[in-house]
Image (cartoon, rainbow, N blue to C red):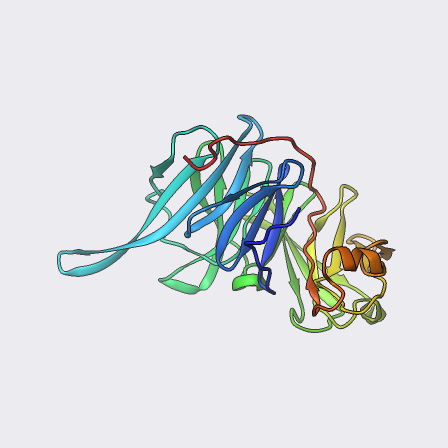
Length: 297
């Protein structure tokens, strides 16, 4: 499926949401279904898309700041809206919880079992970011406290699903080679309890990465963390995906045939004379024939 209106950059993302791919590029959010080739663009300030497995509904969350004067004082308040795709009800205003501070979005979200999690911070305490949880079914938001290392700014935050739980990956050096990274797992949502795992990888693994940054697109059902280069080299050469076992610290390398080392594939998709191509992987993606007649109205 080719999408001419989307241009990937180093900070673009592509995550799976129950048969759809949520694409964040150029500050805009869109979703597409590779099976039906349906492509849906959302207005700016739309931050996340989630799926409710009980109601079988897809919902988009819209958030922007509204500035107004009250008693001569400039206040900034969040405006929150929710859209249920395909229902025809349009965008609906929802009220943020009164006990929750006014948080600004920091990172791309991850959808896990009916909830969307994303990094955020309060302007009053910008050095103490946390996690905002959006319940797709009830359309309520809550705040989860997190250790300082869990949430990074922008695309430096790496949130994945690990054994059905939210996990944060924190490399020792997000922009270069590293032989250690930390994983924080949210063990108890209500008690805000996190477990910490230190992971070690051999430096020899970087010989197969090609000088590019590593991405952590998620984990497989066996609980292995998945790592892959963020770019496809302009040269014809093998492309590898790595699987890391957190408990045993064993790592295995799998060669992905037909992409990096296939000249015909490159020619078909115009990779022959272009510069390096951005690569995004969605390991838990499932096929779906879902199609929305009027998705955003």
